[in-house]
Amino acid sequence: MKRAAIYLRVSTSEQLNGTSIDGQKAACLGLAASEGAQVVGCYSEDASGALYTARPALMEALASIERGEADVLIAFKIDRLGRSARIIRDVVDRIVAADATVLTTDYKLDKSAMGTLMLNMLGSFAEMEKDGILERTKGGSLRRAQSGVQPQRSRVAFGYHVVTNPDKQRGLYPESAPGTYVLDPQKAQVMGEAFRMYDGGASLRSVAKWLQGTCSPSRGSAWYASTLRALLSNPIFKGQASYGRHKKITKEKGNTTISRMVLTGNAVIIPCPAIVDAALWDRVQIRLSEARQTFSGNPARKHLLSGLLRCPLCARSMKGTRRTIKETTYHYYSCPHSRPSRSISGTVCNPKLLDAHVAESLILHGIGDIVSRPEVLREALDAYRRMEMVVFDPASIASAEAALRALDARETATVTAQVQGIQAGANPAVYGSAFAKIAEERTTLTKRLNELKTQQKSFASERLDDATLMTAALRDATTALSSPYLTDGERHDLLARVVEKVIPEEVEGETGYRVFLRSDAETVHITQPMRQPVAL
Ligand SMILES: [Zn+2]
Image 1 (tube, rainbow, N blue to C red):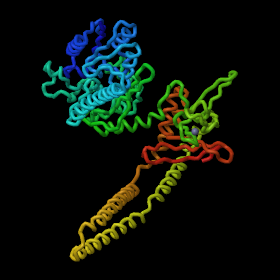
Image 2 (image 1 turned 180 degrees about the horizontal axis):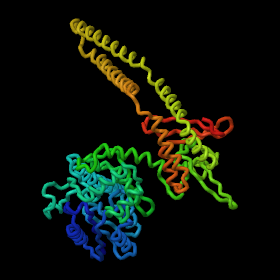
Image 3 (image 1 turned 135 degrees about the vertical axis):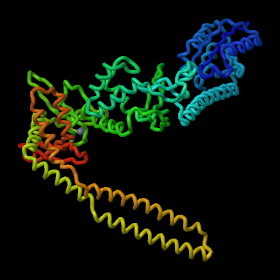
Image 4 (image 1 turned 90 degrees about the vertical axis):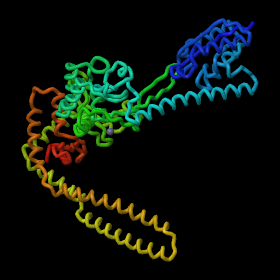
């Protein structure tokens, strides 16, 4: 008498499709009876894992067959064994190797070439079916998202709640349909305040500290600067929730499955109540992107020029390093790719080490010098403006206007030609492309002309007196920088408020530094070459 091991499997996405464990079991018992086999074991599980080795019931069923306790594995359908042709073949091969056989309602083991072909085909169907299920659920979610309903309701940004079906059953949020965003009034207020604090100049670290004393985060127990950064850059707070902003990437490595989330870039925007206005949100994004380079790092171990000093070859931020050898501390800056061991590709960019003491004192001295002689700054600004004026040529407006007039003339000529041509019996369609080309040229020219006019306007308008503003900011900074009561981090952040970047350059065999000052007028960057001895 044959002995049968029954294997039952149902995955969560299928429970509604009538392939319940009980239904499968009834069918399998029927198969065993029709074969006249005695059921010696029944293994069932509720799993949809990609790896069959991660399905314990299947592994047990296979083990019992391999121990010779059963001669046939019975399952409802061949796709119960796995959701890919490769896995199904693997499982069937193991059964065949143990001198046993497989029986399902749609397949009976047949070792002929035809049987193998059949097995592969069934496996392929299983794969298609699996992909179909994914497609259908995703399609449904996507349609719901496009109609303004959030299909994904479990992870919601701090300050919001997405109305769920259980909420409706409990009679909560009678005004809102499931899948719509509602504010958590207290958390929303806290989040709004966090945005305003950061916009007002507070650091991520200090806002996170304030949050820690105010309320607990959605997940975990502590607020970190990184958590806050991720929140502040989420467009949900300006009223743009999204679906599909991230995609899960799954890779199989040995016996483990590794998943990570990546940004997709084609999210569906779902409108939601805004916590901050768009202008505030945008300002915060600008500050976040600027601060990332310059203000990150441990304030207790910060180098004065970190994030400011750039490698002259690759423009990466040079790193400050302190090293004590035989009681002497060496302090220098170097390109992050100064050694092959430091770069991923193993290449060396700029092996030169800059003496940090010399660099820092030169730059501080240089700034102090500008403060004591404001006319230097004024001259530099004027020079910068003259440079900008060259870029903007008033004659370019005249020539763009002339080109537009010429285009008008060409259009009139083409119209006349078309009228005459049609009267003479030509096909009107032949003029279509000529008109399309004229329209295209007009769009380009008009756009260029508008750009030029905007430039002209900004040059004509009265600007703030940048030199006065800069001198005042620099004077405050130098006074504060010389204070012995500042930590390294505070000194660095203070300097970073007035200096945008510093680029070392070789001048007559000596290392000089070109300092780009950060201006209140935002667009003005002045370069200030310095060499040793400092001469402006
Ligand atoms: Zn470099």
